[in-house]
Image (cartoon, rainbow, N blue to C red; front, side, top):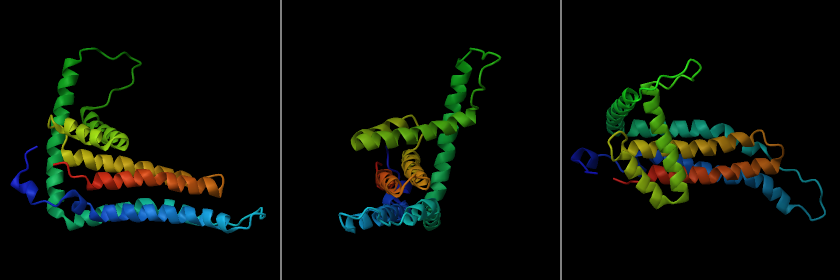
Length: 219
């Protein structure tokens, strides 16, 4: 990928997403602290004590505050880097148009008529949007298994021009963060405090992956 002067003037990804990275990092600590409110009293209790009072409220509070925290951090990053936001939006318009063109061409080549009971196919615009979401999910999953392979997949996905490098990485950040948020959401309905604590901790690897992807500069 050629690095243009315009791109050189833009912040590195870890600067562009600094508030989001900081919020994700704080969320990792909050998950650990909330789980500790369950585990520490159990560890401190005498061996013969049957019932131990623990605090599950911190797990619930973390799960409720996580999404607004990340949304606020994203908004603050956007406000700090308006030139980067403008470039990203222009790039997104171009890649979206390119994906729509590819999908339209594929539809023209597909001459098979759907049957009367067939499920309606996505529109060109919907297919283009789904392609980006799918790319982000794939990169997050591959990066989790092998970061080098994940980086290679990003370059492979953007080679045709229908997707942009930062666009794919940002979508992967969202995929990883969403997995963490879903784990936290599940902790609110856990059957017991220990399960709630475990679900809080299970969110941490996803959140840490989101930090890595938000920091990754592959250009």
